[in-house]
Length: 138
Image (cartoon, rainbow, N blue to C red; front, side, top):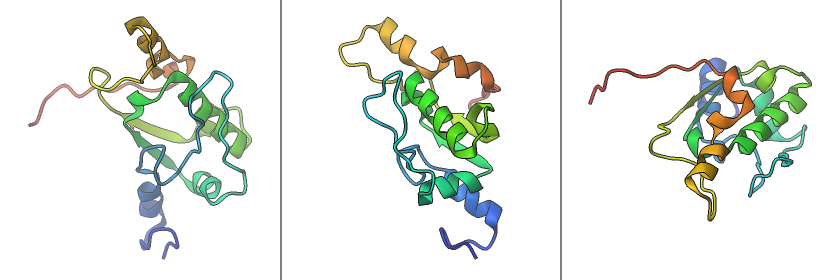
């Protein structure tokens, strides 16, 4: 039995722990506002860090509201915690959202500023495998 969520299966528990937005259960402890030099305040011995060490899959929905500096900060945190140079420390990251609906907020920014700050303008974007839904099932 898992002490974090009470499930009987560890793999299910890890999915439940990781199936949250970055500000909820995992609490990446990202700084606000994001700068190109921002780093997470999560300690390597914190309970959140322990959950990240155990996680096999991290699901982050509503990712399109995150800026590319936020994505870089998450990548840097995972690399530091896992002590590796692999992108996102080799963790499987599943992200999702609609780029036409929710974009990052750039105070007093132009449309070009918003597009430039979005995660698909990040150098890390090429590390993802891109899948698109083609059939609306509503």
